Length: 249
Image (cartoon, rainbow, N blue to C red; front, side, top):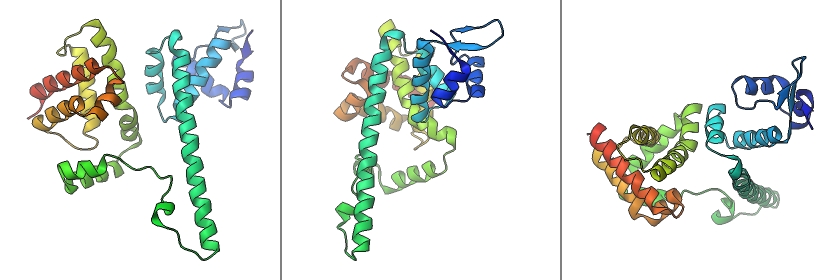
């Protein structure tokens, strides 16, 4: 069964013009086109459009979405959707906590009462690494990082959100293939990693090598990067050290 572009536009909220653009750039190609030139979509294309919209909700650009979808095969569709669903549930719960905090604040102000700081800031995200970073690298470095973030462009913000993930996802198949850490494909990904890092601070050769080693030594980073695959984290470390030796001072 096929659905016309007008039907898909109506049900999805994506304009026909946008769907034609997705077709033109190869992001969402219709299942078939009639002799009159009308585009038609089937179940496979509807599911792909759903994934595109989910990734847009995460703040990814069309180029980034195309890259993600290219690296996902049909067998991983369910796993990807489960991951997106988990993220959406977490985000829903976070927003519900924030709504509760605002409601409590409104009630307190109406009744002329005062709220404890713990209740005032309930539900707001906290950076668990900030205190540790200030102790390790000092207030000036951390504050400078925050100032850099304030000057980010939209593309900078997107790179910060997605860049590290692209590196980790790109390295995994290269590791499985047996590519050396000196392989140009590996080093191209590490260049992206360094660019993302420089959005926050500009590490020297020694600092970048130290960051690479910390990824392996610190269980939190090791689990976050490798997800149980310690070999991937060690591969990233070794590749970062090669990059540092070749490009940094």
